[in-house]
Amino acid sequence: MKTSRFIARLAPLLATAMLLCHGAPAVRAQSFSEAVALYQDKQYAQAREIAGKLAARGNREAQAMMGVMLENGQGVKADPAAAARWYEKAAAQGHEGAMFALAMLHLNGKLGKKDIDKAMHWAREAARRGHAAAQYNLGLLHTGIHGRKPDWRRAAYWFRKAAEKGFAAAQYNLGVLHVTGKGVEKDFTTASEWFKRAAMAGLPEAALEYGVMVFRGEGVAKSEKIGAQWLRYAARSGNPRAQMRLARLYAAGRGVGKQPLKAAKWYLLAKNSGLRDAWLDLFMKHLPPETLRKAEELAAGFRPTRMRRISRPSRNGKGSMPKKAKRP
Image 1 (cartoon, helix red, strand yellow):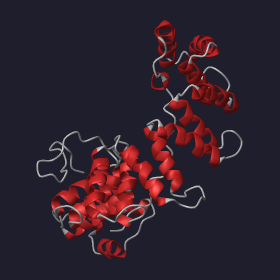
Image 2 (cartoon, rainbow, N blue to C red):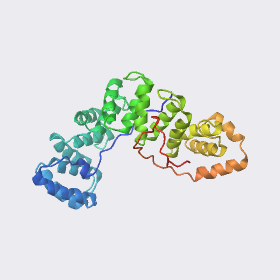
Image 3 (cartoon, one colour):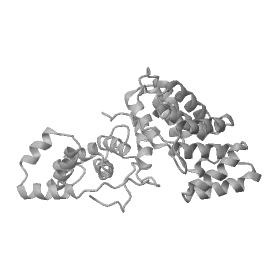
Image 4 (cartoon, rainbow, N blue to C red):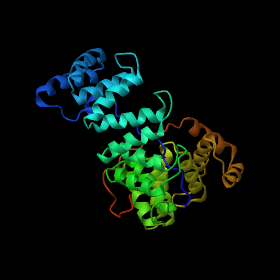
C-alpha cells in the first residue's frame, strides 16, 4: 500500500496558562489562578502583572506563563529571547511544558536561527518526563526532516510513546512505519490498528489510509463498503487524495452506488488541489454537459467539514462511521 508522507506538523506549545499550570504550592495557587483567569479573559496586562511577581519569586508556572506571553506578544511586545529566559527558569525547576517550548523556539528559528541540537535536547528532556507533544516532535526529528541522518528505531520509539498517550499524528506516523518497515517490523495488521486509532481521533490522513486498508483487506477484514465510508469521511474534510479515490469509487460503483455526478464533483475538487488521474479524465469526457455543469456547481459550493472524534468502535470491529454521519 502506498502511503502519504509523514505528518510533519510541529505540535506547538499549548499557549494557555491553564495548560502550563502544573500545580503551584497552595499558598500561591490562588494568586496564580487569578492570573490564569485574567489570561483566559484576554486581560493580558493584568495577568502579566500578577504572573511577573510570582515568577520573580520562583513560581515555575508563572515563569512559564511569562514565557508564553512574551513569545506571543500578549500584553507586551513579543520578545522570544526574553521568553526563552523565563522558559529556562521554569525548565530548571522541571516544568516539562517550558522545556517543550524551548525546543520549539530553537526549532522554529524565533531566536534568530534554528538550533537542532538544542531543540533535540529540550524535546528529549520533556519527552523523558512524559510530554506527548515533545515525544511526537522528537520522533519527527529522528526521521531526518531537518537534514539529520534518520534514526528510524528512535523515531518509532518516540512515536509509540506519544501514540500510546492518544497523540493522533504519532499514531498515524507509527502506522506509516509499520507499512514501510522502517525502525519496526513491517506489519500491516499493526499498521491498520494505529491508522484506525488516529482515524477515530479525527485525523483525515489516517481515515484515508485506514479506509484503503479496509477496502483492500490489508491487515484487516476486507469491506469495500466500510472502506468507502472512511474515504468519504476524509474527503469531506478536504483531503485531496481521499477525494480522488472517492471519485473513482463513485465512477466505478465499488463500495458505493455508481453515481457519475458525485464522481465528477469529487474529482473536480481533487483537481483543484493539483491532483490528476488519467482514468477519471477519460471518464469526465464522456459525461453529459448538464452533469458536468451540476458537478462544477457542487464543487464550487463545497466547504470542508472538520472530522470529529469517533468515541465508540463499530460492532464489526472495522470502525464503521456513526449512523448519523451525513452523506456528501
